[in-house]
Length: 265
Image (tube, rainbow, N blue to C red; front, top):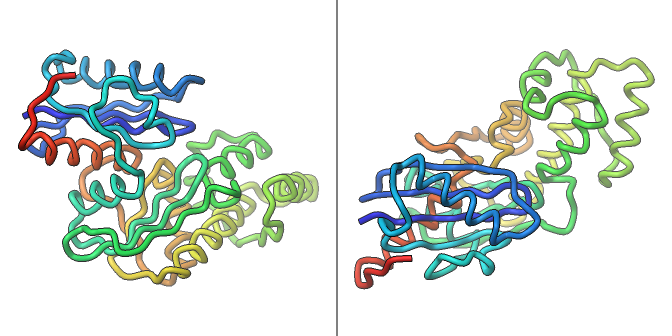
């Protein structure tokens, strides 16, 4: 059986094509203004990479910020459920899933079967999200993809005291003007961000294994800083791009639903 999972976020759209729990293809694009257009583009890209057409897909599930506007799915599921299912499928030892996306941060506790026990998320403030790093990368005039490697060159951690993104940006500009080293500032930003995420996680309890998912998980500096903030090891998902974890979970839900219902989309 071939199924699709589509995760439409505020900054990126992701799609995964699976067959019998094997990932055939994946795609990630920048989200457009209309979630429906993002969904159409990303699913067509994933299908093209798999050498398939829409008629080859028996069931599709959507998730994410724009899930209710995806035109081709038979069902939608919450981001919490999809991220938990995707993480447990790839890494069954996981008990705490931390997902840092473009506009929010989620912490999910799961049991040994992958069932969600508790969860909490922050979508009110950008300080613990990927948007925070984007704004700071612009202020520092560095490529956001380079922040992880640059932060690793730091000789010391500079404390970023402001919680608000706007004031933190002003603080960063001030540090630049004082001649502070860019790697040290970036290292400070990573610790400021992960300190907030760690506080969120500790509010519902943290149990190993802890995995980090979402686009920010591609930043090695965030990984290291989060481990320090939690005082626990933080691991990657086994064998999958952390940015597609939600789409993988959606595809796994599709696989479950199709067992008693074969539909084309």
